[in-house]
Amino acid sequence: MCGGFVKNFISIVFSALVMLVLLLVPGSVAFASLAPTFDQTINAGTLTASINQAGDTTPVSNPTVSFPAQNYSFSCNTSTATLGDSNDLINVTNLASGINTWNIALAATGGTSATWTGTTHTTDTYAYNNTAGSGCTSGDLTVNPAAGTITLDCNSACTSNNSTVSLGASAAFNGSTTTSVTLMSDTAGTAWEGYVTGIGLSQTIPALTPSDSYTLPMTITLSHT
Image 1: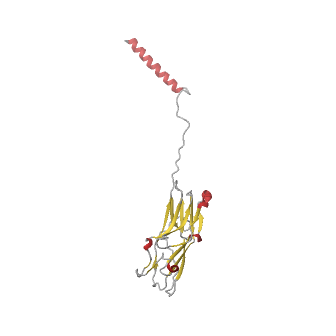
Image 2 (image 1 turned 60 degrees about the vertical axis):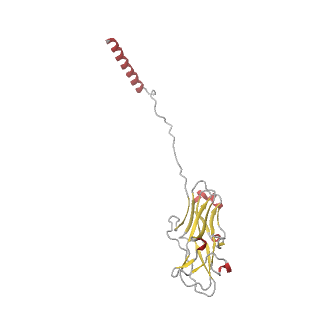
Image 3 (image 1 turned 90 degrees about the vertical axis):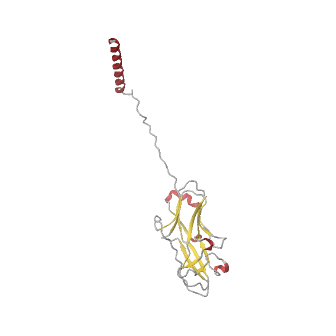
């Protein structure tokens, strides 16, 4: 019994010494890999449109286009204004993936039944989408995006993509036929950022339109394929 115990003890001690030697001898220990793998994720961006202040960074909370005052008259009048100026930049940013084309268009918020409506007397109205009598019968609004200017706003990173971005053609709202007017579009859908200013607006006002302060809420819509 004693001899077997001694043998087992010697065997255990020997095994421990072997393990200690293996730990102390250079090159005999399995170290972790010295070839790390780096990981990096690039998140997809979005396609957005906004009306921004000068500097093209801060959105305008309540954008307004003011047409000059007209006089109560026996004649049809034409009032002109500009959509998009140095303090109201109509911006589009496309950093989304899978976009083929995009388009921004202007339409009356209330649809085809909307009218210019007096703020003092809401019964005072005239149309924005009636081309009868060259617009003088009831009132008509023409939008001319071609008069505008596109400004690239993404440095040299997307200069080559700018060739597919263009302004829309001049058009008059016309009942249910022309309910919106394209302001700017891109046929390629590649990464791009810029803004448009100087879009022409021309509203015909029928003769004997009552004196009042009129408003017409409009909406710019961004769509894509």
